[in-house]
Amino acid sequence: GSTESFDNVTQIPSYACQRRTSLLHQNKEITDALEILALSASFQGSEARSLAFARSTSVLKCLPFKLQSLQDVKDLPWCGNHCKRVIQEILEDGVCMEVELVKDSEQYQSMKLLTSIFGVGVHTAKKWYQEGVRSLSDLNNNKRKLTAEQRAGLLHYKDLQQHVTREEAEWVEHLVVRALQSYVPDVQVTMTGGFRRGKEVGHDVDFLITHPKEEALNGLLKKAISWLESKGYLLYHHVKARSQSFSKSSTMDGHETCYSIVSLPNYYKHNWDCEAEETLKNLDNSEKETSHNWRAIRVDLVVAPYSEYSYALLGWTGSKHFERELRRYSFEVKKMSLSSHGLFDNEKKCLLPAASEEEVFAHLGLPFLLPFDRNA
Ligand code: DCP
Ligand code: MG
Image 1: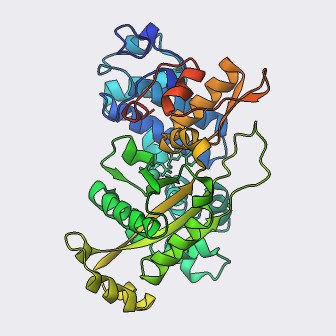
Image 2: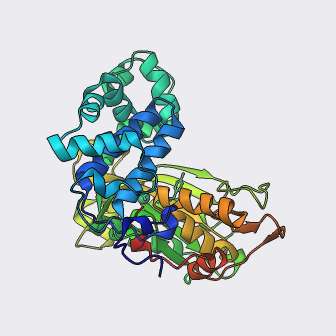
Image 3: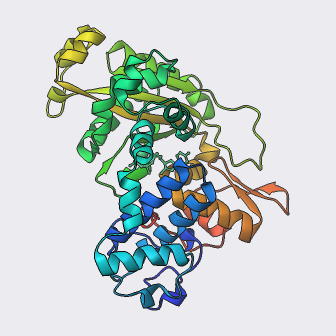
């Protein structure tokens, strides 16, 4: 089929959702370099340039061989002159001067630092940079207005910078399932995001929650949060309510979502007992700060009604670039609007229900891709 490995690069389809992209590939030096240029462009507010670099990066990620010469990329989609220049320099010199300059620049370093804080996007980071903020201590010293999310992000900065391992993610899953099951025993919980795509580490842990009976989901997230909070597991959380007024053709995501920071006690890893839970509960937040037997982990909880579950699962599994391409393909090729709530046919003016991810791919006329192959 069209998603098998490509012997001939001219066969590589243009949309990332038409190709298999596994986690491992043979051109990491080059894709890392292009990803830096993509990030730098987005820091400068140039979304179009950033997207162009993201597309060429993604094409290189699905190549089944290591690039040897520029001849190899001649017919690749999305590999323009700028991208080719970067590839050529890396093939010839091992590094690309432009990328090295970007990495060394004060703006790139500060923007990367600031946007790595939970709750800080490019827009805010740029504003702070223009106001002279260069480091976390600049931010801490100057008493500027921070949102509650950003304050939590700063407070737990070190922990949140560390990768979450799969073992830790599974521990969090166990905890989240326990919280939810104490109210709805047959609730369905799925780990989504990078871990579902086979990544061994992540920057957070994402969960999708559903139940065949919609009533079972009413108030469930709030109750589970209270459960976690009462046991001392929550360092921060904020809930985004389900959007009531979102149109069928909108690609916006309106699910009820909890963005949180969970404290993972180290002594819990191999030992599930309530005594340890009691100990954690009785520490106040400043004691938790000073004792080092726990660490902070970012956790997102998303609730989707059963009827939207396949779309939510597809939408929250990623990668971000894969999702972006899937939506672009839907719109440009199929004249449909895809979101994590559903698929709307803009010509027939109707929603297309789907009972599985496979059915969504079928609606779009795409060969099914396993999560492992969605690392675009
Ligand atoms: N997602 C999306 N658009 C957003 C936010 C999320 O499409 N604005 C989807 C795609 C992501 C998934 O949700 O893959 C989870 O988001 P993360 O930011 O957690 O991304 P990953 O889980 O893929 O990466 P990481 O391993 O860094 O957590
Ligand atoms: Mg994630």
